[in-house]
Amino acid sequence: MKKHIVVLTGAGMSAESGLKTFRDANGLWEGHDVMKVATPEGFANNPELVLEFYNQRRRQLLEVKPNTAHFDLVALEENYNLSIITQNVDDLHERAGSSNVVHLHGELLKVRSTGNQTDIQFWTKDLIVGDLCNKGYQLRPHIVWFGEAVPMIDKAMQICTTADILVIIGTSMQVYPAASLMHYVSENTPIYFIDPNPAIESKHNLTVISETATKGMKMLKALL
Image (tube, rainbow, N blue to C red; front, side):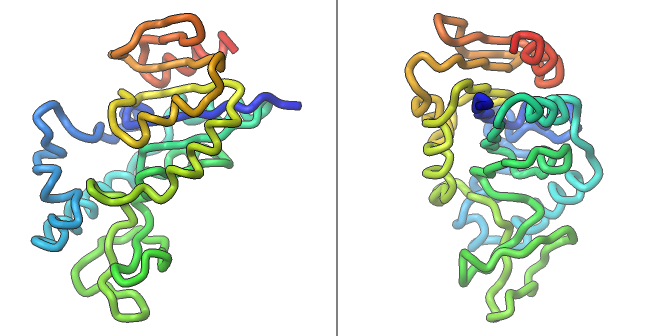
C-alpha cells in the first residue's frame, strides 16, 4: 500500500511563479492595508476597492504558470498517495496536475453569493459591483477573509491524522488555524520543512531544508 504524504503549502510555493507573497513586514498587502481589502468590514465599507484588489490578483494569476516545485509534487503521485492542503488562493497546483487539493483560504478563480455561501461559481473576468447571483445578491470573491470561519479546516485536520509523511513548503506556519495542522500528525511522523528563512530547526523527526520551493523540492525528492 502506498504511503500517504500530506503537503501543506503557503505563499512561498507560488512565489517563484511570479505571484507575490501575501504581505510584507509592515502588514501592507500590495500597498494596501490588509484590513481594508481582506475583511468583511472592508468589503462593507468599500466594495469597489476590495473587488478591484482581487481583480488585480486574478489578472496576475491568469498570466503566470506553475513552477517546477508544483510539477515535482505531481511526480510524487507515482509512488505515494498525495494530499495537498494549501493556504494559497491560486490554482497552480491544479494546473500542474495535482489531483487532491484542499484550499483553506478559498480560491481566486471562484466567486460566491453574499446571500448564500453555497452558491459558488467559476470566475475568470473582473468582478464588479452589480454582478449578482441568480437570487439577486451581490457576488464576492470566494476568499476566506480575516475574521471569517475557515470552512475546510476540519477536513484538513482529518487528512493530517492519516499522514505517513508531512511536508511543509513556503509557509511560516505562524497563521492560525493553518499553523495548528502539524499537531494533528502522529507523534513520530517524519516532517520535512522547506523554506528559505525557516523559523525552526531540525530535530528528531523534523528535517529543515533551507531552500526555496523549487530547490527544496529537488532535495526532498532525493531524500525520499
